[in-house]
Length: 286
Image 1 (cartoon, rainbow, N blue to C red):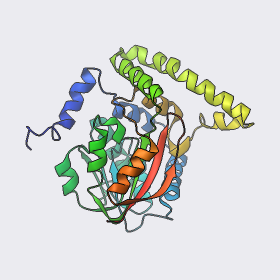
Image 2: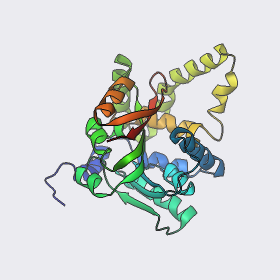
Image 3: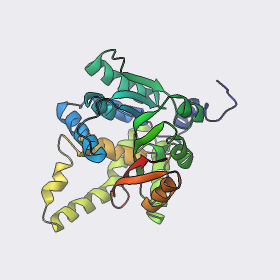
């Protein structure tokens, strides 16, 4: 390993950034989510992949999970029949993913888990080709989003799919939330939960009133149910949202134009609205 290369240093730098209060402990958040993982959540994650990728299963495909987090979607892809390669920069996230593999697939040779960084160009170029590259809500937390967007293309086979989710650019609102996230990571641990409640309360009130105005208040309460969208936990999503730093954003047009210039065609676009993530599925045509 060339220690002079900043890409190779990224994994080590994460420890320093967390201790300095400049990076959120994503893996710690996912460790808590794993305690509530059940069959219904896994099935919801599988349905999410099938829906966005527009496939009945992933049999015979190679699936790369970039920033595997809890490991839920690596597990979903493996259960759908894919050969899976998972990696994450955060050691606790890697531990979560390995724990899910142990629980459901033992020492399965068709599911590889590593601690690596998407910012490592050499690594991304050396891991082979994949039919599906998946990175939901990860690349905007690297601190170098556009470099990550460039690197994530490297393993995609011709005709392969890229499924990513990137925070929407809301101008001054995004700037304010960047400051909120910075402060969260500088707070003592004991203050982070009440800070999350305070910071997210306005969003939750707005969502609740909107559901009433639309005549569907049950939709708001459903998000706090045992299984949230994509099988995730709404509370863990809120913690991730308030504390998730580094934090970068991009409008859907920016992402679309960038990947079009790289030889990709947009297959699906799902706009999260407001401050949330826009989801994209691109197909490599060149």
